Image (cartoon, rainbow, N blue to C red; front, side, top):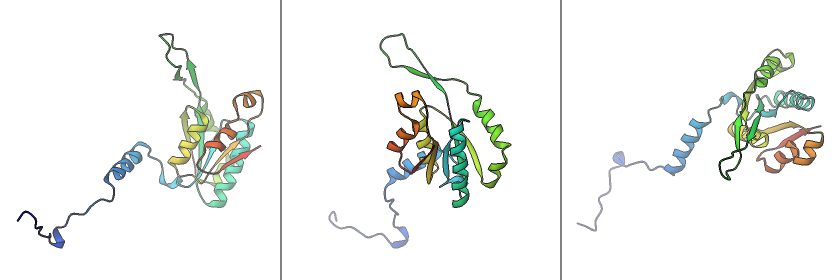
Length: 176
């Protein structure tokens, strides 16, 4: 009976997954980037303690309060390029201990104006634009708020706000 198939009874039929590969990828992605679900669809704000980042933080607090969401404060630690002298290899980036995040965390913990919304402080290392967008993606943020860059460095290398606005997959609010 090579050409005949016997149907399986309904109680013994196998359930088929729609796409087992994407289900596996989602499981790996969720395990790799655990984040507090209370802050899903929150507001991400870049903060380094500068005047423009303080203004961005104040605006982000208002956004989070009005939308009833959490605030994800991101501090991107410094990474310094080092020259690799062996051959023609590209520069290597070395994480430099940045105690500024601890200081900022203590300052924020003592701030009365943050009592209005739930917030967390996330430390990252690397390119500021990439890390802000990555945190926004991990938390499914509704928006990213950054302060504007003033000075010659921003004019030469491009401002963080400008680069982020070009590449981000969610709204970017730039506070002057």
